[in-house]
Length: 380
Image (tube, rainbow, N blue to C red; front, side, top):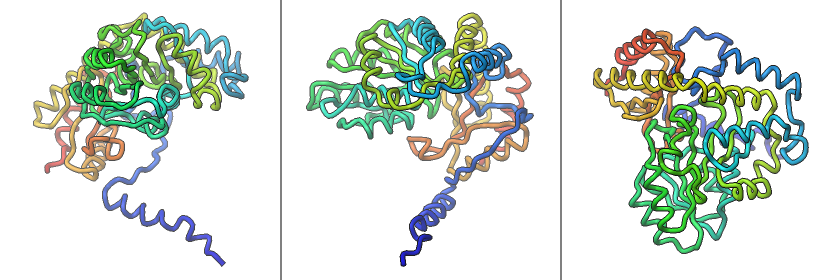
């Protein structure tokens, strides 16, 4: 008789390889109040615990229920969802918006619905995992371009063998906080008849609309944006922003929209209130950006390899996956929580600590962070 233990016995070998490479992940449940200075979470505007946002979530739960009980086309669309979509489109300056249950499903739904065998995809090397998975499921031929390499994107578009094409990028790259050349990418797309899909997750609410207006994309008929509601808005969920005909197509074709439960009402209510606060209190984003700049300057002065982003995320390189893990543990003992990014989460294969500055940090918090990271830094 077949030994049932052998069905997944291969997982032990995989676990051993991960441990040897310093790539083992562990779930770390946190208490309601950790007592740590938080540079790990992406609550850039400090709204996840804002009483107005939390109260909006509670009120939505009492009015609409804890869950939607079905997909958006069955029972999963409420008047609250419709209001959130209107406000998201107005904030970003796009014609329409469509809310998904997460930023991941928004990316997956948008890219797969807009691609296919008759479409070529040109994707940035540093893309988020959700966009990578979307490429894998798209059925399209995918060309991976160098990071923020507009000439490479242009060449791939010019030499494609099918009529349609999509260029995929993030506006602020998850891996290091760097800013994408959206205007130049859009110009390449327009020259070669391609559509642009930009993930605004780490720019939306921090850099205003995430960079759309600055790049001249707010009303562009050939540009689509995606966003997570779990970063600057401190809630949960995702959305696609863009031309009405694109949104109408997604309602009919995006599988993660058609077959997944709608975003729960408490998250929708929280995101709606957070969006209004982000609009009315722009000084929150200013503070977060100032803290990020101070972090970067201090760590660079200490001799560390630090990214030079124009966002609220700062990337500090580590010599190896294990050293990054040990470094994150060392600063945690000093009261600082940071995000440790190792392959495959770091698509360039470089391990690093990612520091996400937020509006609620104090000058003393930032000073402590610089000192703790500098004093515990691994020496290669």
